[in-house]
Length: 113
Length: 116
Image 1 (cartoon, rainbow over the protein chains, first blue to last red):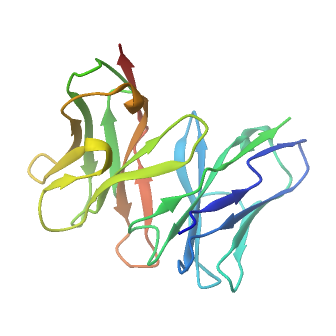
Image 2: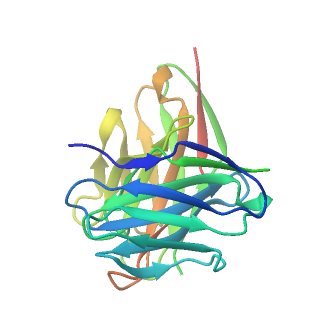
């Protein structure tokens, strides 16, 4: 059974640009959650999608958005990038939701310069 | 609100020694608790989880954790450390009352170093 796939693994962007990250969950999982990991703030919840609907959102500005497609694949978009957006972005896949057993991808390392 | 405190940002043990990583939680509802491990440049891998039932939970790679409600703790242990256990470990608690409005709240992590 394939795991959670995140692409790309590494990204370098310039301040002010926008970026899109992709996550393919485990087959059959309808919940995809996104987390941001930084040395200073640790792991923080961004949002969760379930069956193409956002059903939970963390305390991040509106520059952070996402969507989920009918095949459960999810994308996360960050607009007007800031230096502080440099982080490891992790996607978690689960059957029932991120509060249950969640399986994480390897992450996308975003560097904003 | 649910929260997690991991005591000790760095723990160093000798190969073959006992590993003990401490986690205390705060939750207004019966908690679901998790331990994840992260190797360098990797994502998180689930080690074990506690939802209900038996309070001593066994996970992968020889790790186990015991849920102690009276102490609000969920410490992770392994009887004998191996070099391959060197990694960062995260304790997490489920936050939110309603399915669909839940998330994982993580501790700040404990970096485990194994000395030969």
